[in-house]
Length: 90
Image 1 (spheres, helix red, strand yellow):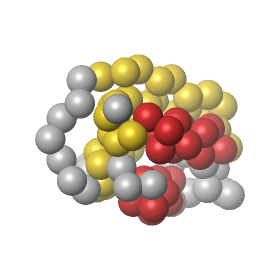
Image 2 (cartoon, helix red, strand yellow):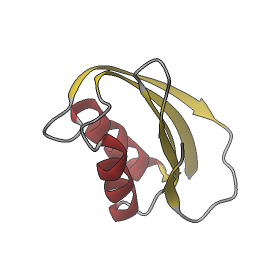
Image 3 (cartoon, rainbow, N blue to C red):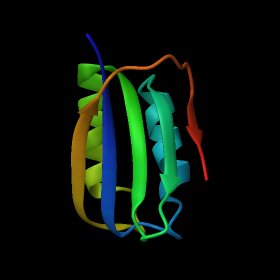
């Protein structure tokens, strides 16, 4: 079953290559979607794919890359969309 989630990641998550590592992790899991920095200092992402792979991506986001300090991750399910890649947006 294909699912899509929107994540809002809070903490020290900008300026630590979070978007780069999120794209790398999502690509390794075969997910599509996007990731971007938000003006409020959070990182927002949408990830779509098989439910187990999406859940693994959510688990990764709760830790983030080694330089990040994730305080919390908000997760909302959203309707699936067309798309084949995972990209960084601005």
